[in-house]
Image (cartoon, rainbow, N blue to C red; front, side, top):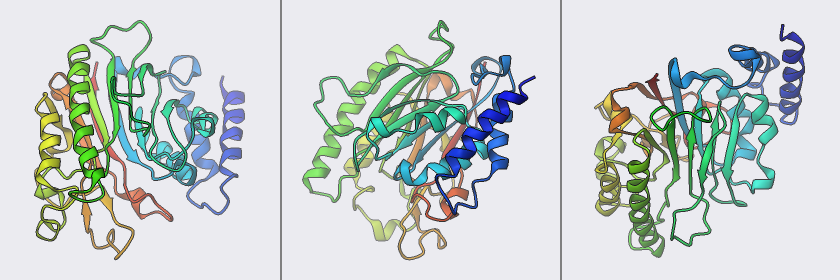
Length: 319
């Protein structure tokens, strides 16, 4: 029925993978698996209208250069089968975004990038729409925010999801001018999200927040003290966002310490689990009861030449 299409698409995916020699994790088997999933569902097409009849999997991943990490992203998409993925630190100009490669894997992409730094993208099984790439009224050339509505065209606001992808400012050091910029940026983001929540009750806000919510999210709270990523003003900025009515999905299921999403490349930090939990998926009150699972997928952090972040995931029973 779809075998010819499957062979052609698998060939395209395989050709893409050949651009990255020496990556043993990327195999033709995975390319075929991707196309097999594309062939399932309505008319063998790439769009799976899962918003209304099955559990949805949403993920966030700071890939720390999509050009470098594209083979790993392709591998992870084939293995994890997410339906929506928010990426941060793509570090690609828009003209160089790998639209064709991701389309071959079954994803529509919207993106807002710049050369060398920052950059955000949203990948989805269904075409994202109503795109926002800047905070209204904030003149900021850094590409750090991307919002989109995910759902079949014509679906009601009650059925579709609104997704806001954030790459929060790092801040460099407490007291630095970049730290002041971070706190101001967070305040402006809060204003933006308040409006988004009014218009879109089914809201997911996710990304690299560059803030540890509390001491459970730091491998050594004493050593980090009130340094950058852990300082009280940063945590207050994050709390002001969650107080809008957003819930840290991971903490809906896990209350303990020792769970991290970022590890420094130095000092064998990943092997020693010297990490921070700074990658978050927040859900609105309207989605809280639909949240069925949340996790941190440590596997990609152990791959060769990994990002220093690993994917975080959320599952929603959205019908």
